[in-house]
View 1 (cartoon, one colour):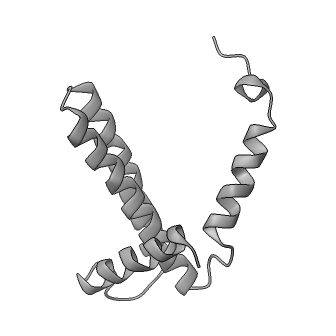
View 2: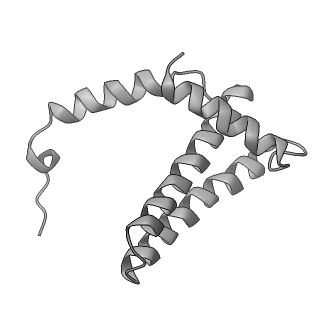
Length: 108
């Protein structure tokens, strides 16, 4: 295990203990939980747009990570995800480091 995996376990345990994963773990339930990640991204956008300040923006980014890592750990528990987030993250970082500027896309 490593820090990201340990954090995911801890966040998910807290989420479960507060009732956020009570009931059946259905496809619809997992989809709804992913929508919470989207909502948190929207909250960062609003905090930035409305100049709410550094702490509020950072707090909303933390919420994105909390929701994402909670979902990841629940998905691992349900057998939806089998891969290590840390390993995939580092692999993705290496892939991105080897890509062309702007990943070869023209941005206008």
